[in-house]
Structure formats: C-alpha cells, structure tokens
Length: 359
Image (cartoon, rainbow, N blue to C red; front, side, top):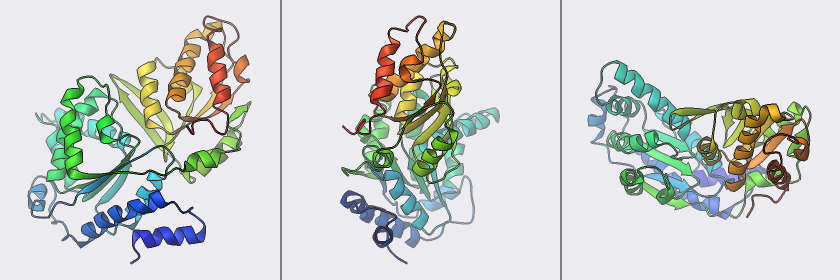
C-alpha cells in the first residue's frame, strides 16, 4: 500500500495537486498516525461502557493538531489522510457540526435522568471510533468551552486518536472568551495528547482559485455562484453549519470545505448581532452571500445587520462572494445609517479585488 507521501506525489504528477513543500512536510506525522492505527490490534467486539476500559491496554497513539492560515491546504491533507487510513472505526467531521451533535446527545442523556451527561456521550463515541478527524477546530461559545475539556479527556481515555485542523495556534483558542481561565487546562491537554504542527505554506489555494473571477454579481446569478461553489468545495452538496452563540443558534444552510453559503434572509432578517457574526467569520473561510435586496428606511434593522456582518467578515479576512439587487453604493441610499453605509459599500468594493485578504 502506498504511503501518504507517495499518494501525494502521484497526485502532483497527475496534475490534480500543485507541489507544496510545506504540505509535504506534514505527511510524515500523518503517516505515523496512519501506520500506528492500522498496526494496532482490532478493537473488542463489545461496545458501550466496558469498551473504553478494555481499550486502555492499547498503547495511546498521539494525534495531530495542524494549524495555519486559510486556504493553505489543511482540509485537503485531512481528506488525503482519512481516506487512506485503512480502519473502519474512523470519522471525519467539521468541529462545529460535531459539537452540535454532542449538545443534542447530552440533552437526550439528561432527559433519561443522567447526572453526568458527558460520560455516556463520550463512551458512545469511544465505543464506535478509533480515529476522530476534525476540520476547523474553533471555540466561540462558552458552553462548548466548558464541555470540551472533560469530553476530550474521556475520548483519549477511551483510546480515540484525534487529528484536527485549525486556523489558530492552540494558545489562541477561545481567546478573550468569558471565563477563559477555566478553559486553559484543555489547551494543556491538547498539547499533551497531540503533536502541534503549523502549515507554513505561502500559498493560498482558495485565493488563487478566485483570482480573476467575478465575486460580486448584480441581479440573478445562481448559475455563476453554483459554479464557484462547486469549484471551491469539489461539487459537495454541503451540510448545515449550526453555531451556538450564547443562547442563540446561527445557521448557515450549506457548508463544505470551509465554504459557507447563505442568503441575506438567512443572516440579516433574523435577530443576530455582532457576537453571532464574529462566530460566523471565525468558522468559515469563504462566505457566499446571496440575494441582498435593495434596502430602504423600512428595512433599517436589516441594513444594520448587513453592516455588522460585512465588518466581521472584513476584519477576519473572510473571502466574500455576493449576489445583490444593486451595486454596493445603491443598496441603501436612504434611511437611518445610510451615510454610514457608505463605508460598507466601500468595503464591498475592496473585497472584490483579486488581491484582497492576501496580506
């Protein structure tokens, strides 16, 4: 069976990948994990509470925390790795989607009268998986921050190997978050259980894909945006991305490979605020925002939300693809805040530039 480096080189030779020294330098760590997982004895047939105790006899396989800037190829490497690992007990999932599942499972456990809802949830996961691969680990919600430490500890104790990507170095997770001091032991746990490695590529492949492409469309543009979506996600159908922010849920209807796709109505007609849009900007690398209407005084609140959303995306350097009823300067010409909207129009213009977001 070819190694990950050999698979990578084959794809480079076939033209489906461009050679990147930084990406290739990560492959030995992933190959180490792959070989250790495949060489480990098969898990016991039993599942559930006792499975994690029987697994303690299996040597712990140290995972990987791969961090780096957007568009550097982290998700591609994760796909290559998880596809190649020849074990059935594996799963690749976006971190936010996983945490949403954990919240739901904990809620169901509490309904059954369980006092410690984390324990049965972690045990169920550890009873089914030996490899858990996360894409885009980000902690933006205090509830998640208070759960992940004990959850991951139990997963590690249950013999689960974790490989994850992130845009942030571990020390910057949940940065400036509420009660962050309670979260710090989790960062220590990650450093202990995972090899931390940066992907220092100078190339931003997502940016290159968009270079020279139109990214702001006036009028109906479903066909053009479908083409961009398919190019960036590899023709993925996409799944909903649900972010828990305080007591609210922020939903992006379609999400794949770091690309979110939502309409103006999905994000700007709902009672969302700065914290919600900051969490969204932290979770996606590209946002496709469709069907921005021409706004008026009667839609002042929606205009304010659009301003807040664009500000969050701009500051986080999230690439934006947009369809709108008008050019930016004509979207909101009268109403409270129309003068301030001129800055948003200017940012929408700036974000169309092919070089925007590269610095």
